[in-house]
Picture 1 (cartoon, rainbow, N blue to C red):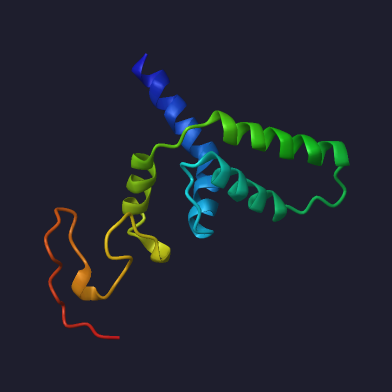
Picture 2: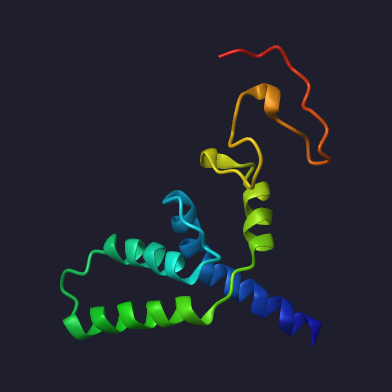
Length: 119
């Protein structure tokens, strides 16, 4: 039974990952339904729909919007994904907003050591 729950979570993450990523790249909050919809709409706008029936385009848009309404993305998941990505793209999970190297901290909250690297 636990395996089924794991597969379901994995499936959900694989389906929501593009929306989460687009939201973060656009400075949106993927935990907020309205902002998830904006991110999804942005993704759909990147699709080349040439040669696709209008009804298929409409169905894709409607179903994607429904999907955004049905899912819940906890803030903890987003924070974990951002930490796993190493805070790439200037996105932070709180605090100093990506300041200088003097502000960087390790996973345990201790201050990072200056390695003498300067840009």
